Length: 161
Length: 201
Image (cartoon, rainbow over all chains, first blue to last red; front, side, top):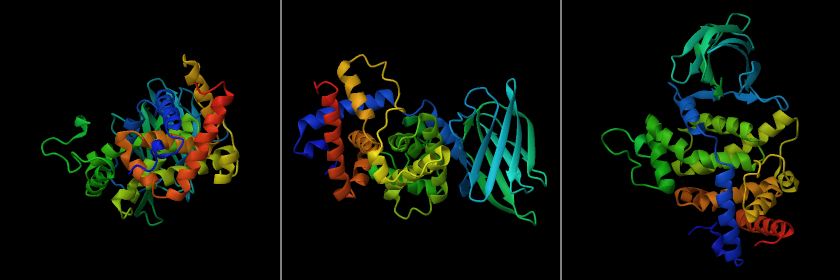
């Protein structure tokens, strides 16, 4: 029944032996990162599931802010770009952000094991959250239309600050 | 996995395995059961990871792509008409996101199947210094010299060989005509490279 069982092949046992060894090596040398499952479970534990995902756009070999280096990260989805700059203030962070196109959208920052922090972007699309705890962090943008009525919600993958 | 179970009554996927289990989780997740989603994430993240890595992403980028794929699933929970199609959807979406990531982050054209078959990769696999066994080292080196397409196929093959990934085998067996011969060709290439590295034993 298992169509990709190598033992079905004529070359049989040798292929099976190579695959057995390869399987062991792949799992020993290249497993998913420790904690990835938990970070995903945090990222998807959202109040509403009808969300659009903004992708992390990495320019060139930019390694992100996985260390403690401050930096700017850009997330994009079809018609919204979210730029965020993180500045460490010891155990916590200051977040300066910018939404393009601009709009007075609600910005929510989720940090694992902490309460959410929420602010509203100004009419130029800028927002500041001056005191955000460090940890596994996700940004949500609750969009409003020109009448101020709620619309789509955009979410980012988590980043580790 | 017992810590993931809800208190009290057994969840509907209890005792099921393979695609039956995933389908039961999908149905429960549509009804708002967040535990069901967590079960899927726990059990299928290795699949998404190995597709991302098999498509040539470094570990950091692969991690972003894996998260993006799971977040994208949220709004597709109701759109995946057949719950059993989840594994296929995850594989397809991960490939697409990986190729998109190549395009935007490296300023390169997206990797077509043709291109991935031509492109040898050596620069992104983890260091093999930890490998004490000479045969292991040679096999890992040979694997790293395969093109992306073959690396992905062989990763999926060994993953699907594990009992808990029966659903992966089921999903991948659907395009019988294409995956079978291609896998055989990839295995031949791997063994040739292994022989060139100093024999298969």
